[in-house]
Length: 107
Image (cartoon, rainbow, N blue to C red; front, side, top):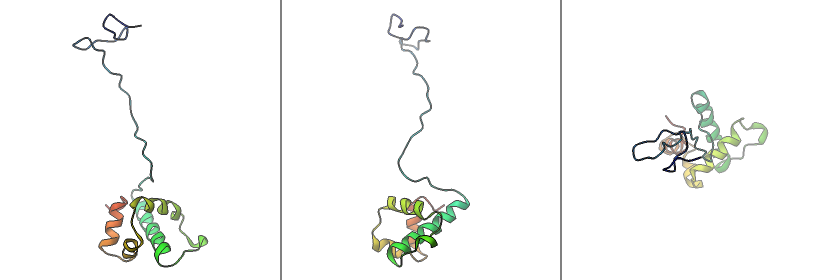
């Protein structure tokens, strides 16, 4: 049921005769992999390096992969880096730091 100005019946009108909007909590849903925090962040960094080495240096057999290997692979897919860039990130240095920053894994 509406009032004479189109507002919902029983709703307190604001100046100008408009009913206040309903307040709702909105949770943004974005595709992607959740970024870990704390100790898990360090474990994810190691898993990312394992995946990078798997892709550009030497394949890691499934039985030797870390438990976070698949999640790290999915996260790495979001970076959009080429093999040459990933190769540079296999060693400590600016390329690795840039990769971790791009993935949200560097503090």
